Image 1 (cartoon, rainbow, N blue to C red):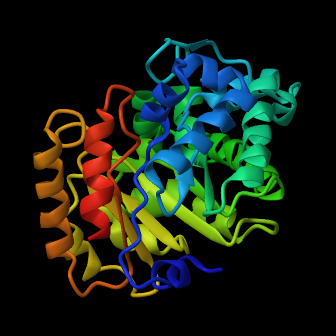
Image 2: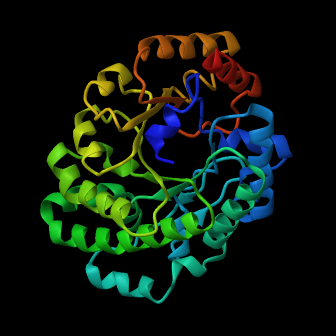
Length: 325
């Protein structure tokens, strides 16, 4: 099923918040335990599906996964998302040290593929997986500030590293699709700071090739954190079936920019609303967003990004209840 068909398939608005991290509390586990144990990770996703009944289930977001599979040092807190500690690539020849590894043989990355296999056995709604996008993975290899500068001072170096990262993105996305993923969400948070032209040159072209590669899921989504208002047209040009947009974006204005067959997904504030407001405040924020998007058919109610572990479950209940009304 195409994403636009899914969005318009029911009699009510679809509701699919990004719930991975707070779901760990349903299994009494830490984020780190889920990140290293596919059976536990899948059990957490199953509990999310049973407890909150979202219209799609996204496994836990982890931007360190592919970089760690290439051998970069990663910090794994118990209750926070992992982070890449070093960014060793300075020139094209530095990639040679990474080519000795097949990242798909990495135990953690293989564990996420296994998680998707297990999710598909027990969860009836669409199952979604996250993949680090080519530019963002390249930024993890180089460092975000260094790749930003290199887009100006050494664009060929950026292209070489992004091409290297793109191959990993395609292969991992294909493996997740083979494992049963109905939706692949390509994460490109490092692209937020790019101008429209630079985005098209260093990010959008490569993301489009990922989406067009053989063996991809039926639903391919692009997620970029922050205010992406200035690059919405370029995001659409990637051929994404859906755009997952963060809280700073005016969703109604975005609906006037994107093609009607591109689904907008978002964008209740995951921290300012979902973490820090009470249930009544969450319901109010959801109600306001739904009122704003009234009449926009290519829209799925979600959060702007993955929710923090500490997000109160009663706030998620309020989100789901108000979203379904």
